[in-house]
Length: 481
Ligand code: ARG
Image (cartoon, rainbow, N blue to C red; front, side, top):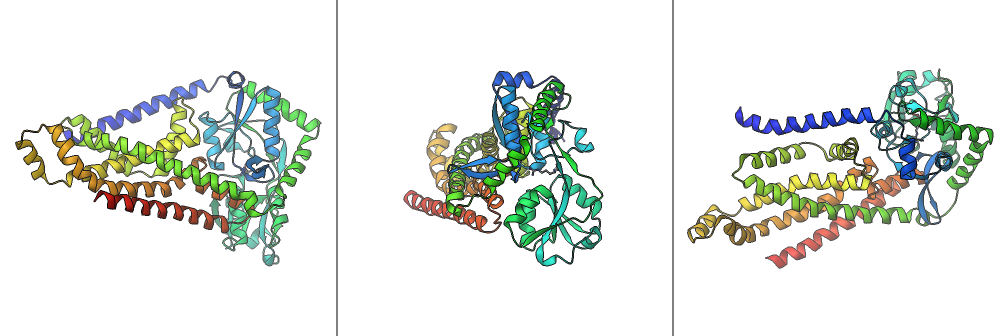
């Protein structure tokens, strides 16, 4: 019982701390952010760039850029407020959370106004209206015409979107599949994985034009057009007023139609696959290597400390190390990445997705490396310690000159494996928007309307990296022996 308490207390303290922190934060959020934006000189807009022509990736002057009508609107808002624009890309389902924790100042992501969201955030005046339709394969033209025809069909929609809600409520006899990205819906319909996808007509229209095997049907959902709005922090009237001022201007000067046209042009530019997307893969691969490298370095330092703490005679050090290792190994990296990304924000530290991802990976890897080092140390027979001690060496001398040199031989290969694992594991960080290889690959999937080919390239790049590294480590290992 006492032993259990020793472990539980630090844990409880940790959670209690987190709790009070998140409470104080909500009080702070009540004051306007407009002045903070102005003094820092830039506005942070959150979005999910999978929604052409509103927000999507395109190659502009050889560079991967987020473009679209929503981006033009965001630029206009920033310009009218006299500040620069910074875009933070993340999954659509993470946007409201990001806004509530202050990760972003506003969300401009084709977001519809709904009563549920209105409980959490405030909205600007609408700047567009969305009509919801279903995308199907042309071959199924006669099969799906009305809502009732979708009974038993597999229908997809983007996670946490109004389309998902409509699908669930109005196609109760269909099997609804929620997907991370809006383009995934299209891709899965065209690849026969889904029979239909609920989408906004303006988005689907752009896709259907490109993909000749698809078409739109209007099954007459019992929902009128949904207003598209900017989402803003709750109760921030000054910021909302500022945004509404811009929207009013956009309407009176008919800017929206012009911005949509510009977006269509960008969407339909015709370059070869490689000129368009080659840079995405290169950038992703480099960042993945950087992530993995940072992770082994941080993990090794942290893991060494943890392993030594675990051997310590002080129970508190030992307990911290045990709780840490067990907790980290008992929770998924993806969850840890979210906790670091949003948790630091709650504590008032604004980290980029890249920094948060690297920290989460380091924290995660530290636990595994600790175990690698611990078992490496343990693998040295106890007789060695006894012999060294009887020769008059101190405890730390024994560790340094007798145990460690032998342990390293066992630790090295496992540490190398950890490096290889980190290269692959970092793919999880795409969920918080860290621009590693997986993230870049799925961006290409969306932008190119090709769900399969980009992932094959991604797989090949991962393989080349891990295979080369394994070989390299093998050479070093043989040298050791
Ligand atoms: N209008 C829908 C909603 O508010 C979908 C928006 C999706 N936006 C995006 N960038 N993927 O739920």
